[in-house]
Image (cartoon, rainbow, N blue to C red):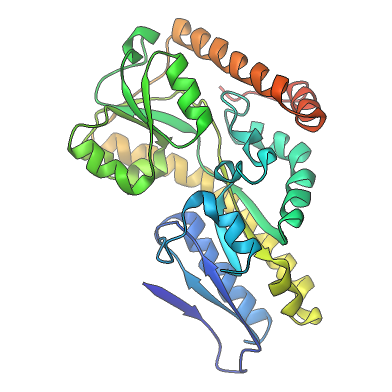
Length: 321
């Protein structure tokens, strides 16, 4: 379904195509539409954003940064850790156990945000806003929170290299696949478990396939909305400061929405019968050993920038329970 946000009071002078993979009922998609509406209102209809959500333009996640860079679309939402093929710095947040909650992520982004901005500029775009997804849990057909042995051979859907490494080292059999393939894989028995946020589990009606939720909180992920710099320059100068203010306001609202959405999704999943559990002390210790291993390897392979960011962050972070 296409959305067109416009006002009748003025003929649009600039029309921009905004692409998003997010389903229309997801909070990120909702505030993407709010952004378009507020831009239209504050520019008296002279800047019109044509909203294309739910992946209707067919962009693959890992292609999005390049698509905005090349002007195939003017604005896009993208999961940041899927852009590591273009810029490795975008994967730092999703290192296992580095940030395990919203407060951790806020602290980490005080260090990473300036470098994210520079990386976006290298790809002919600017960041309008960055917002988090809720913490990663493991949704499974059985209780796997007691010990690492429960993960042995478990076929777990993952979304990135970090997830694949993390679960592989815990003895599971990770399978990296796009979201569109998850429900068919669950219904046919190809998957035993899915690592994702509670909001995504609700979108996928996981109660039809899975029964347990292990609250590993092993990873945080963020989305960002960017705009092509050539498209930005087409926007009349008198409107740009207002659009930046709108973006900052939307970002703040998205952080609140993410926290609320995570809590609401967990409650809904529980109401549908999914059983939540915390990892045992032994499993938590094993997870931390694996996380430390992966982070150390990342630092060894990274440049000075990533090493300094992680060192500073580990001296500042406050872990959520």
